[in-house]
Amino acid sequence: MAKARSPEYPLIGLKEAVDKVSAAYAKDYQNKVPRVVLAEHMGYKTLNGKSLGVLSAVGKYGLIEGRGDESRVSDLAVTIIAHPPGTPERLAALKEAAGRPELFAELDGRFQGGRVSDSAIRAWMLQQKFIPLAADTALRSYRETKQLVEAESGGYVPADEHPQEVPPMNPPAAQHGAKTPFVPPPPTPPKPGMLQEVFTLEEGPVTFSVPATLSPESYQDMADRIEIFMRGLKRRSDAEAARRRSDRDDVPE
Image 1 (cartoon, rainbow, N blue to C red):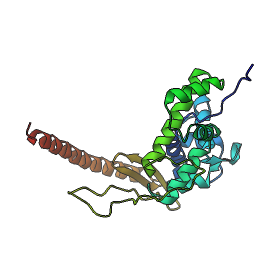
Image 2: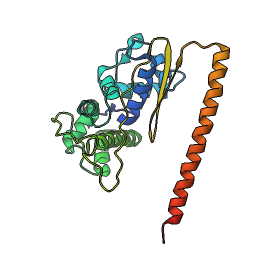
Image 3: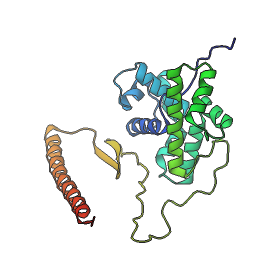
């Protein structure tokens, strides 16, 4: 009788893991902190089944290291965070992280870098004594991880292979009015005494930086100015939406 297996696999894909560790890095950089603090930075209030599973997944990709009160964002994670998409340094780090989970490395070797149907991978997992729910979760994380690497490099290369020539971040010249794609700059740590929050929209990253200590009067001034600024953004957004509707209406049928 085959021995039952307790599968080890990341509960989330690499993209979500990078987002989570980026949020932690924006708050505490590479300082050693308790795991509960890392979980809070990643959006969880306590250490529970969900947050512990996410922390475990981020660790399996090599993006955090240490144990207990000595946990920190890893150098590998900082390499991914610090370099813009498409750069050789970020691609190499992403491929290394993608190959860190033992199960993913095994799947890459067994199925030629994942070039096989989901049904074939799932059937193999079930034969390895994965329960169906675990097989489905592991397969989803594996595919999401490969999609991230494919999106940034134009094709997944297993971590133990040397990366091929990296395509340029921007096309050498715009053709037929095509716009140069936006490449976000690497995040920069805030100055001492400042708090910084970074989150990403479809159009690019948004960085919010404020003094760590504000008087009630300064807080109200800031809130008022942000409200005015957001109203201006809303007008621009509405105008852009109206322009797009007009462009669609002007297209002959």
